[in-house]
Length: 249
Image 1 (cartoon, rainbow, N blue to C red):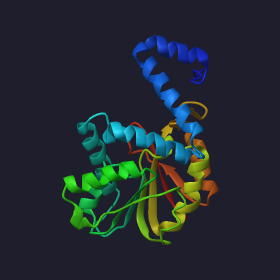
Image 2 (image 1 turned 180 degrees about the vertical axis):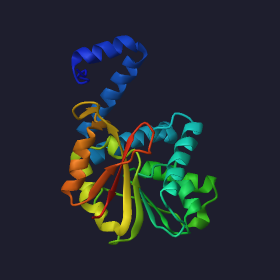
Image 3 (image 1 turned 90 degrees about the vertical axis):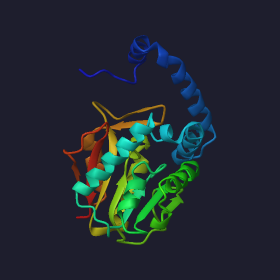
């Protein structure tokens, strides 16, 4: 029988096993409670979380604990897309592009003007601009913009060959994932695909401090299909998060 990770007993056992994590946990919990009270939605809340984390370290804010890790995960995403047919003439939308861990490589590979990066955090997009300058990619005509939600209303129909959202739905309530799925099919070309990652739950759906969300794979697949899209779990993706590919039927 799987342990109930939301139970007090489980949390006490985890604290006893890793006492060094207890104080950071309570600090993070207090910060999140404060930010949640000041936020009108999860997007507002997570935008505030990103502002706080980016001020400390933009790389850590998107989940990389070192520059080597930042480079490696970006290369992993880039290589995977190339294996799956990404070509320079394709238009790519990077939802939750962060400080362009993968984006700078994709921008370097794609034809000028074909990389579109969007994020809910203006702070991390400033760091993304720094990445563009660091790798001298200004001539690739980067498109970077802040968004208030995942409805993608300002983007044209059938415009993108590839849409990605790496480590976005892993920080997103199911209602917001549904919002994205309700609209992403519109911006995809009929032949295009949408890849996203998520934390795979080993039991019921749960979250950690409203920052990290875990879902059973079947729940995500059913949600995708409820929006009239096809979905498959990608078996050749071997990383900390699972990956699902979505297509228009």
